[in-house]
Image (cartoon, rainbow, N blue to C red):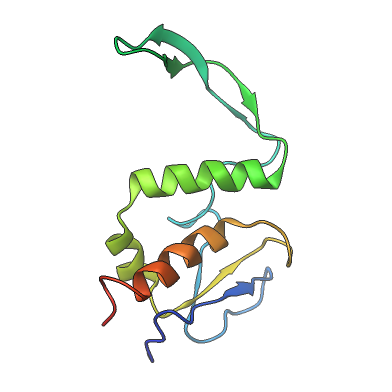
Length: 125
């Protein structure tokens, strides 16, 4: 594989078609798929007060009504679950394929942001 760190891009994945060379799928149910599906609900009701102020959240419901919200939730989940280094090690140098419509907000853009940011910084080979 030719490593092209910092040049990764988003590719449209189509069911039943083979991915192009040097491309990895980041669609569901892969490790990198967005768990926040449009039309689903997320538990977010405040359940307690934090000793230093603010609320601690637990059971409740937030309807994920649009793509930007799903992508924002994905960004928060991704960066709280994986380090930049783990993302770069797994996806660096590959184009990223998903089923999202072109020119729409997409979780793959979050992954590309991490890859492009880190290619200009600490982990460039």
